[in-house]
Length: 551
Ligand code: PEP
Ligand code: MG
Image (tube, rainbow, N blue to C red; front, top):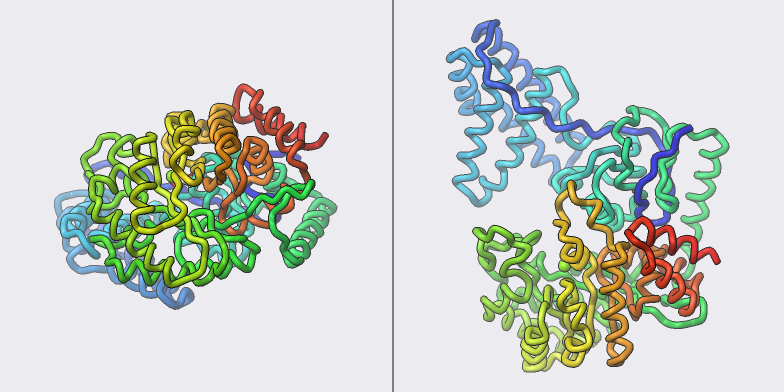
């Protein structure tokens, strides 16, 4: 038996057959055909009709909105204009591979230039082109597999487009060779409660069909489990399911210290699931979804309706709404300058809102109106706050609209280091560990090649969290955590030890975190945090915390 090691997401375990995600095909080279145009044309026709038939078959079995998308793709594959483009390249002597690649690329550029809905469909063309090329080469089509049975998906990393296509009810577990704890795969796994081990070097050498055990709690993949081990896994899965269906209690440490466990939400429709999983409120409501698909800001009325829908589901409970956080990984055409060379260091978050203050004022107006119409305890906060001056600017403006509790997100080292000054003006701080890690470690949170730097366990990040925790204790102001770090059951204990008073996370992580923090007193949490702080790097901090948590 051999064991692969990576970073486990959550505490779950799963077993099942591996299905490998196939890689994107290399771009064909421009070569002259030796077979001649007619033979190449026959190859193209065969490949295109096979791909169209396959897409149509998937559409028939998918149903709903997915069926419409797949049917449209099947039609595009056989589009006559596209065929003419391919034919003219074949007549000029191209190989089938080059003609397909080049014609699809030209078509794609045309759609992108048109923009709007057609522009958005351009990415679909890439997928169809890859399928036709794969057929020509006689290899599996790249992209998300759909083997028709439950499976353990193994990939380098998953892009957002892949995760959108994945049939999650068929995915027993995810394993990636690249990608760290803040990769898209990790975020998806946390959000949906899928067992995952990310960054497991060597994962892509697993074979299709091979049975594996994926143990997120230990961050391991067992590639040749015995029958006894498989039986033990089934028992653990049943025990976890039984625990999760038990009564939920409010978050508390072993000594009774209350730690509110809150949900991160992206839209009101997700609130019911959060409540069912015992969320004591909302620690981060990301308002970007209202804006991201729009070509201009939604009206005050539209926004108010959404906020009321959210707040009504949390009567008497805390709901922290974040002002629009546009820029860098969340670009918005009407707010951000597309020409910045370094958008993560540019006019983003509160900086962008300040440059378009009417949008900020409209959002605050809608929130104040929703607050007046409902009985949740509404808190508002600004994203990417860097300075004390920005803190004063935002909190004063929120109070101008009658919003009682106004705070800031601490996502950049500057505001963490000056947290006592920031908290002199803000009612609370909420630490966004995803961005705080990105800025502390100088590692783009979306870039796989630097994923190993993007680890919130890094003692440099933990020291900054401690600064904020200490400032919160000195000023008597709450300090929440709303980045992915709060969803890691052991890191959650460390964050409490560093001074966090509430934790907000994807709803699926609530039960594991609730169980983990209940095992330790505040004194334990401080001791475990001290052990992690004393390490040289993220792996050392994790190991030290693990060892300290067992004493
Ligand atoms: C964060 O940066 O940790 C955070 C919670 O905000 P987002 O992930 O939306 O940038
Ligand atoms: Mg952020």
